Image (cartoon, rainbow, N blue to C red; front, side, top):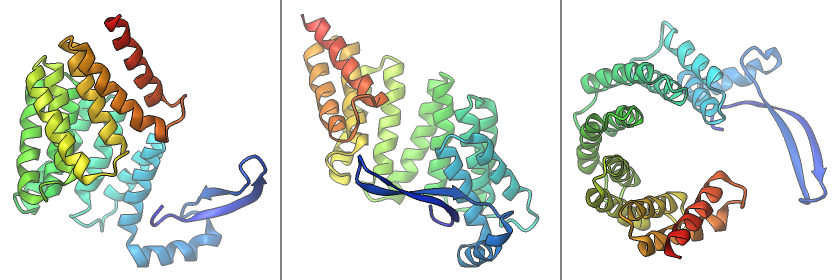
Length: 268
C-alpha cells in the first residue's frame, strides 16, 4: 500500500497455483533497522499521509483497534496540520460505525463537518462525503428522514462539483434509493436506482460490483411490489456479473443465488 513499509519474511513456491508467494510483515517505526526507510518515506510523502493511510489499511483489513490507534495518534500530535484533522475524525467515525457505536460515529463525523464547512469552499467534495457519512449512520439507526436530508445535501454538492457521470453521484442516488425502499417508497426507490444505474453503466467497467449491487437493489424493490418476473430478471443480471469474478462460496454470491431461488419459488 502507498506509504507502507513491509519486511520480507519468506518466499516459497506454490506447486498447485504455479506461482511464487512472498510472506510480508507490515512494519512500524519501532523497527530500528528500518528507521532510515521510514524517515525517507516521511520526507517523501509526509508522516501525516502515511498514518492516515495506515489507519485506512487496518480498517479495511478489519483490524479496527489498530486503525483507531493510528487516527488517534495523529490527532494527538502537536504539529498536526488543520487540513488533516477532519480525516482523522472521519476515520474514527468509520471505525465507530463498523463497531455499531453510532452515536460516537456521528460525533466524529460532526466534528469533521464543522471543520470542513469553515475551511473549504461551499461546494467541496469532501464536505459532500461527510454529509454522506452522517446519512449512512442515520440510515443504520433507522432515522430515514434525517438520512434523506443529509443525502440530499451531499447530492446537491456533488452535482455542482463533479462531472455528471461521476461514480460518487451514482453512489448518492443509490443510497437514497436504499432509504426509500426501507420506507416503502418503492416508486421513488426505483427512480433513484435507475439514475444510479445509468451513471454506473457509463462510468464503470461492465462487470463492476457496484453495477451488480444496483441490479440486486432493483430486484429487491420488485420483490417488495410482488412483480416477480422483473425481480428475477434483475437478480439474474446481478448474478451474471458476480459469477464472473466471485467464487461460489463468496457471501455476495451466496446471497445472489438465494435471491434467485426465493423469487423462483414465487413464480411456481
